[in-house]
Length: 362
Image (cartoon, rainbow, N blue to C red; front, side):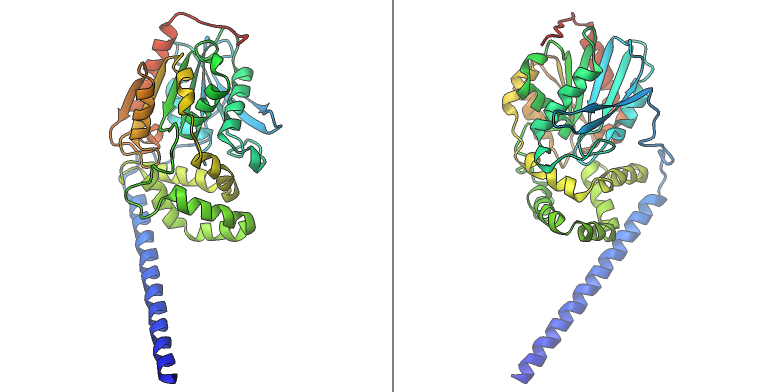
């Protein structure tokens, strides 16, 4: 028995040493990979992501009292208002290139409205029970009412969870589309069944396995979890690059900015929104959106909301335009901004050329 115990102890010790060596090797490999990425040519190095100047900023109060931070760029008298809703674990700065491309354009003259979703960026922290896609739809309505006027041509643009917010608004207030809302742009988003969109190169889905585990841990030991998050810095950076962008050659500065936005989102907030993302299903809301012109954009390398989700939306909206961004991942708006911006500006001009169909009383 003693000999057997000694043998088992030696095996266990060997396994522990082997595991430690493997972990050490992984850490070294990840550190080397991240360092190599930062040593590559970076055409966007030094870009002031998240620091663009606003002409106006204010707070809109949501129906549950949560303050929503808003920034505007452009004249208050501009005839076209474009409202941007960002995605999960991001903030309004993710629209950096769209903001630069559209501000100051005279044809058409536009007012750009950006806001941080509840519990994200500079907006107030929401109660967990109110972190739902339906509530985000209500929040968007409050932004819409506060930022637009009766004479405006209004276009709403949503990326990922921001697109889901638009669908929730359509489900909640279908009469707004084609009346108060003149156009809709849905970027890298989904009408539902996100858990089934499991990345093919993962042995288990981030959405269906990792996030729920973190959710539970964050509720009971948030400081410990946040500490562990910092220790996994290189691993998280590499995962961020892989699941945000379509190419491993994406400038390191873009991944750095994505990493900053994600790191600034408390794990408890990630946990708060997980159930609503997992259960998101707004296919029934698409007919309401169809009352306004629609543009659907998605990268063909999107691993988070794969292109078949955008193709489904386009099939449900036969009159919608679908643009596939070649080589782009989930963050096509940062990775391939010129292509996205050309489509966005062209769509805005087409919408503005249509006759006005306004009814502020909607």
